[in-house]
Length: 242
Image (cartoon, rainbow, N blue to C red; front, side):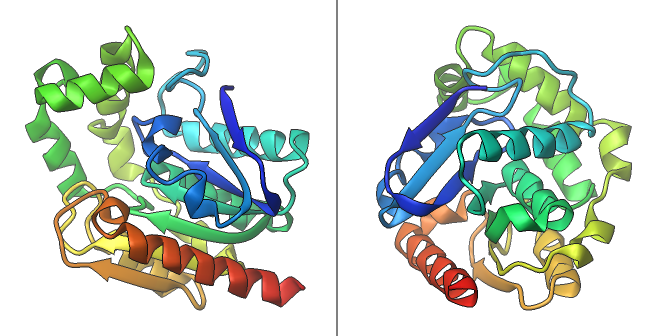
């Protein structure tokens, strides 16, 4: 697993990239957004500069939780603040539900918690990666290298498959007992508002910051607000255990 770490004080902040992203997705935020705390970002297996040694199925999320547990333990980053974008947010929520002692807080951006028709239809309209707009293709090459089309194609195939339609972590959300913050675009067609609504219905005390936009990257649309909200979340979580 490819890992980047920026030094700072504990507790650490751990940054999980979106579905077909990499550590480079956080370049505009790290290390400044960590507020002086350690900042750890890594490429999930199959993406970026990590090994391509996995199958792309919905079981990936369970594997990612195991990988995250192992990475946190190896780097003595326990417990940590987790920040996850899209699929990275899914992994963060699952770890908080399953191994809460490793987690201080969870911040998610444009998170997915179940299959939905809007996401599938949007990805279907995008077509295979070779047909994506040139700026997106260049971004994929920077993230994954020469085999970017294979990586993106396998991810796209999963998220437009029947398996995705039946996938859900909603039943596990009730087990999350750490402070949770979500930033979500009101009109995001890659993660419609129903995902944040599910958090509101299942996780006690969750705070949702709605962004009145269609973007799947609301943290990039409102970066100052995002960073301020993160620091407020971390301060609250640390005060509860301090």
